[in-house]
Image 1: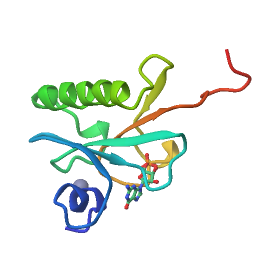
Image 2 (image 1 turned 180 degrees about the vertical axis):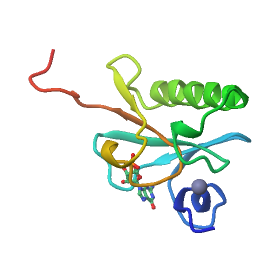
Image 3 (image 1 turned 90 degrees about the vertical axis):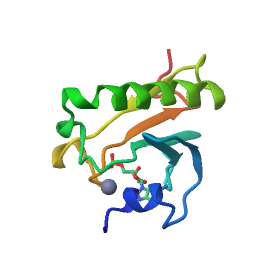
Image 4 (image 1 turned 180 degrees about the horizontal axis):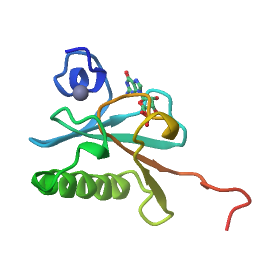
Length: 113
Ligand code: 5GP
Ligand code: ZN
């Protein structure tokens, strides 16, 4: 398997894993775009949100609940944060394993407010 996120989930390559359960794994982005930049991924290989079917309801629910829990843990729940998922070339997707970006700890637009 040459998918980098599958290999992180399997523990085959190092990452700063901040959460893992039977459905999802979360780890810090290697090139953070904000003070808090965590990727939440399904343990199973899905290419993008475009692969999501009704049978993935539990998985998606889990990924959002993990994002919520990590936002609180990282101290950005109150100040605010952004959840992003890219699908396909024009979105800028560069790793073809579904992931949510949890971004926080700075203003996401400038000027603030
Ligand atoms: P995308 O552009 O596909 O939405 O996001 C992919 C993200 O994965 C990028 O923010 C990139 O920095 C991150 N990334 C790519 N390779 C690795 C890696 O090996 N380890 C970690 N922790 N993050 C990675
Ligand atoms: Zn994968």
